[in-house]
Image 1 (cartoon, rainbow, N blue to C red):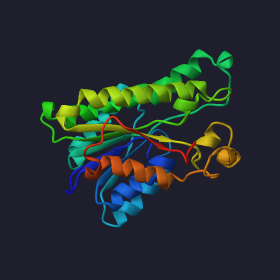
Image 2 (cartoon, rainbow, N blue to C red):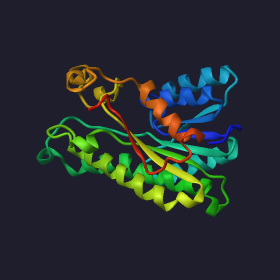
Image 3 (cartoon, one colour):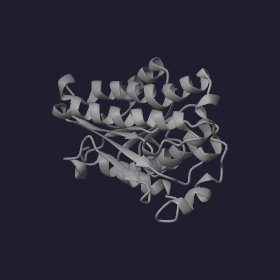
Length: 251
């Protein structure tokens, strides 16, 4: 991303890692788009202080699993904000812990629709705007993976781990596909991070419970993950593409 005012879209940006990335990007002077699915109040509470401080931020409701909603979101960004320079594919879900032989089709369809298809839909729209092949100025995409992609999450979230494994492959393939078109594509693979995604998966104390399994003996913070995201979006990472950066405390 260049130093002039440009726009970064953060999907699932109203909470957790996404919200931390939004705050850091806004502090650097970027216009930011906070995408959310349901929690309008949280999204507005995030963008309000950015605007009050003279920054440019808007919240846009869109289900990333719905290609039409994604296209409409990008069209609004085109109409209302400085040119797009970055995308953070952060929106994602987990489910209740379960074995594979307990998972029904609806669970699997939701897991892959949001975590995988949503990332594809958003990346497609971003490439159409960023690629020099399409008249764009270039830019960067950062996908959110998970250490689960390496570990497999047996007995808990094998479906989530498999979806994030798909994100790793997607990152590598897309990075090579658009490497000559001014777009860098990388991923950040968080480990055990203190966020409320654990509560949505039915284990609100999971970060504290898992901390002893981490070599650094603690959970990470959302700001620590966001710093990696912001670096990968920046010109400081100008020769980095197709990389998957672990932010896992050594796990």
